[in-house]
Image (cartoon, rainbow, N blue to C red; front, side, top):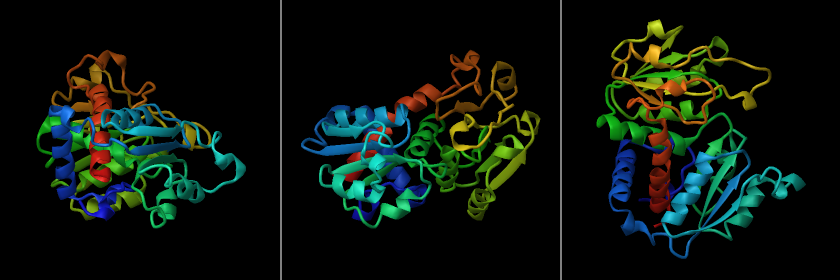
Length: 300
């Protein structure tokens, strides 16, 4: 892998070839994890999170430990780092790159990757950038679909919930556009509809994006529901998602699997948790293997 591909700032860095390479690495790690137990021996990885995180932070730290690396970390860098004294993110990273061989960052600024990518020499992995992107989440989402469906070509996907502030949605659209003949159905309250810029980029790749007003607008042979919670922390005021997945709704869509980046609030009923089509906990567990593969590829 070329040096320029060792960092993960945005999904635009991934083409189908790089995705296939990632899938094969994840498959091998899942099948032969013992081979990777010392892959990061004597390596230090820094995790710097300016926003709350459970799955992303802990799965990255689990991935580092499983690869034999060491972790230095700040859980709430917004309050418990020199950011509270006015230090810029770039200055922080210029310091931390002297302490670690790779850095994982989550930050509330949409554009932080653009501000740092030309200045930091160690690999950087984006653990979330404002409302814009969450590349590693969408990589594990897509890997889960790859594992479940085999082929990712020709899928019919309904993204439902908060499509405006949901950074996982934005990254997922960018990644799935690398495949062929994808149709995405957007189902959300009007105030949370997907921005036109993301629709345009998706359709420029030859795919279809269809806005929907209710479950009745969706085809019964739908392949995937991708549900998201309303991102109240990113908006002024409140909004509500009326489109709740439950057993009754899912009787119409027999072949559709259910993904959710988590945490959920009430957008997926717990009566679906034991349904074999509900993949969201498997999806979360795949986060460890996906992030192991990304770190292995970045630091070998």
